[in-house]
Length: 238
Length: 261
Image (cartoon, rainbow over all chains, first blue to last red; front, side, top):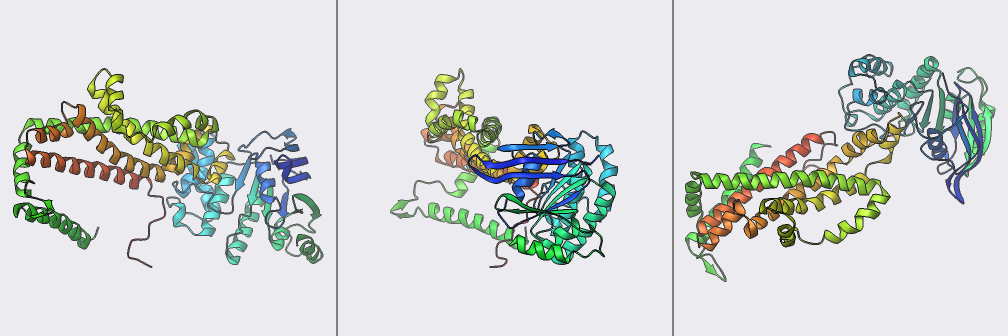
């Protein structure tokens, strides 16, 4: 069900001036890969390439072993903010992937209500995005991304604009949802602790290349000691 | 709207009419001369008489029909051309230069073209009305479409949405606030041009009637025509504004004037 994503010698950007160069990456089905790096290192570019929004200028990209030709419902994208369509209510935003998939109005109702409940937004369905807090909007984005039952979810610093408490709550929510769905997740962040908390592996991007790839000891286990990797990442990251 | 603001608006209108009445009734001559202008009461009298005639209502209906047809056509064509030129480089290269060349020509200067092009006067007037509104609507739409955040489109495309979904589900609703601005401006220009065209080549219509009142020195009649144009313009642009507000309720609520800094 979940999707394998593979980059072989991937370059993206303008010919002669690539934003990403020669990236070798294999994201296993059901894995959570966190991508760490400073601003401008090409994190978002990698994510957009995986989403199919940016065509590779070199190398190749595979989704489930087949060449990736463009965006599709199997790879959902979650943005840092303002990803919701502001003229659609919360409910109509969440049902959007289902409507695109061709489900009838009556068939959409139950899954949308289910997802709104799972992200803790019961009773907010008829509100407009501008009437919600930043954290609530990200909950809606998460629900919308997952309502279409994608095989991979690509997240571009989804909690980067939230205050620390809301961010921690969203991380717990994401993990709870992922436990059940087990879809492949590529999660871009510039926060070392967030990368360690969520990921099976951490990829470090620097200057448009893949600088390092680390296995996280005891992924998502609150008891695991990751201080050594944390120290290493802090040096690599800067 | 608060009672205070309604009162202020009514007072402004009454003040304007009062000043006009005063200047014309006293036949003030101070470089500008008000001695030939009809007073408000004379105009009101003439209006009362005209309201009882079938011709007045026929003219009004005729002008409204022309503007509605021309403006609706312009809205369709203008939004279409705006979206096309903003979204497709080929379209921008193909129709952009022609549009930019025609755009500076005042629509009313197209009267000779309209007369040669169309078998009937009527179609010519609608054509001029349409041409007038077309450009502001096209330009506003083009800018509004370009200003739609790409991320909304990316979101829909990564949900599997195709071109149609992106166009009707993202681009058009996202550009709507800007399009409404273009419609508002377009309607104003449309009124100017429908009245001018009627004055030049009409056989009915408020513009035609206003001009023919002038040619027989019926000055109160001229002012009845002007007042009618003003009221019609006000009502139709109010309707467009209202529709625009209804459709863009999702926009962040504006900070009311006078609040804050």
